[in-house]
Image 1: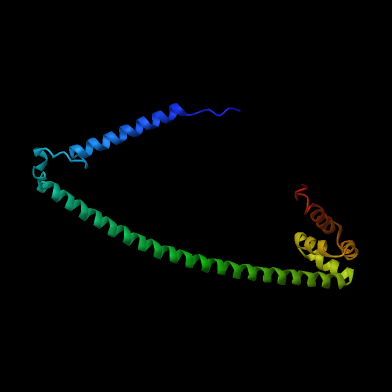
Image 2 (image 1 turned 30 degrees about the vertical axis):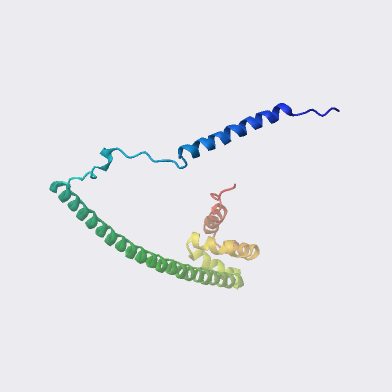
Length: 187
């Protein structure tokens, strides 16, 4: 491979270097070594403009508006304080109501449990009675009431009681027993 000479490139560099040296000599010769500021025009040295004071009506309107805003802010702060107090009172009342609801639920659960226990014991008493005596007692009861107890009894004991009851009363109780779940949802 052949190495090429760079003769013309060196000539350009020498030429540019010469121009720069010539520029420096001219500057030193003329005494222009620093940039000089252009003096400002005479009009710029005028005193600054003075603004006229605002008219009295404008100043009074602004003062009145500031008073109204301050009054509204104070009213809003009072209202926020009242709302905070009301919120605290409502929260306390809600807590009291929740506690009362829980207490009532517990009381109702105890009452339901006690009533269920009473019905279970009474059903056991009727089952342990002689069928003839229990039939006479059930015949004297309202058919809806008698059907409730017979539905809770063991089938053998309920059959013995029903067989000892008069036929019209036994029929009415049987109809009530058969129809008490007729309207229950099937799905």
